Image (tube, one colour):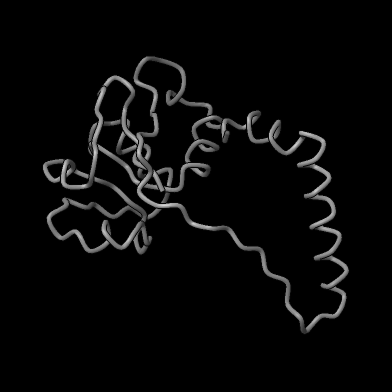
Length: 143
């Protein structure tokens, strides 16, 4: 989970207290991090969708937008809009607020899922070993 802002803002921060005077968007109901979620001093504005938050950020209705980095970068790189076409492009700030692990589940109720899970893991391992996994991430601006 990272903070996005306009590239021309040229802002940096060390901890979330540095964000206290700004309007920060996030998707309604999203858990960012324990520290962020419990920070009642932050001016948090909930939105319904990633697109809505990015539009509000771009239109200066938000100072920052907190979301999953990979989802936002995919959205930015694949939208036919203004996000990545001029000096007001949206960028992720460092440090990240949190790192969420991604898990893919297979129901054990369907015995065929064991075969599916093994095939998935085998394919993923082959993609990583061949370098294609990293190439896919780079191709979509996710690495």
